[in-house]
Length: 239
Ligand code: ZN
Image (cartoon, rainbow, N blue to C red; front, side, top):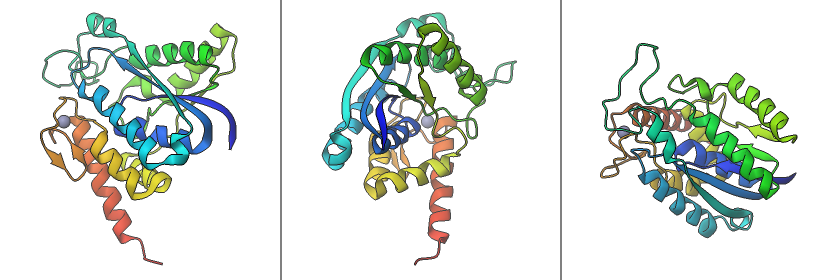
């Protein structure tokens, strides 16, 4: 057990839910932060509450470590950006090669606000589910970006925050596998039922891998990862 506490950037998606379990497994005190930035898939703000409740109910050891949740209003981000995540627009690739689901500055702001809150709460670690392997090409998910931001935040606050990125080099199949390793079938079930990835915010249909339209890039990533994870798991020799 590592001493101290952590603040998990918990959006309500598969990745950040897995990161929350990862942090609860390691740290004695874990708080969560979420952001309302005018996202179309606002339903993730509801499922994140349900996921936290499940952790309390089903994982008593983790529940005793889980501290308050902080929800910040960052709707100004939606006001200043013109993206398919914050406005009714078709998901497409822009001339820069980036999908128009990219919200410029999003992770930079989230981590900076996270650090400001962690400073006040006395939490030394910031945990985020960004990933360079299986991502949509977002430059603010890259390892170099996060490392540079850690330096900037520490210089700017005269602190020694550590930004932890447990999923940086994993793909979506490995993320499912990590959840299984951390919390077994209960955690996998909690992630299927009470996390949300679909960019369009759809939850009418339940698939084996969870809820969503099944067609947007976020649904595709989640489904493909789930399928690969299950295939690999079923291939493992039984001991
Ligand atoms: Zn979708």
